[in-house]
Image (cartoon, rainbow, N blue to C red):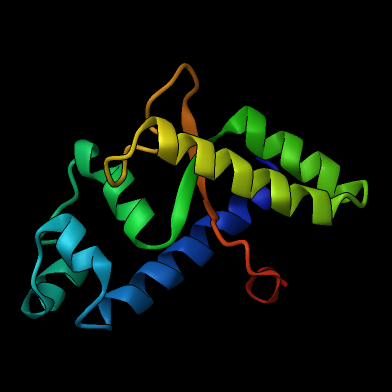
Length: 128
């Protein structure tokens, strides 16, 4: 496993935890949870079913991408193409949202297997 693949998971978990601390977070609505459920969520008493993973990832501000796309983005970023990659990632997310407008279904459908969540933002200040 490459370093960039390992780094995505702790960042996602940290961001998800931050969302759970905000009572008006879209994560609660996407999962059908209430803020009062937080202790049960953190203790593992409430689980996430496979069909809810795309909605959870999306509500936390991430998109699922295939391993192939993730590796391509990582390779191009190493080559110094970061500005171009931000625009490409935004276009991919936008096209997937247009193809599958239901919340959470953006990247889980299709011929490739989803891998690590990738932060989704076109605001360059947040991507730095």
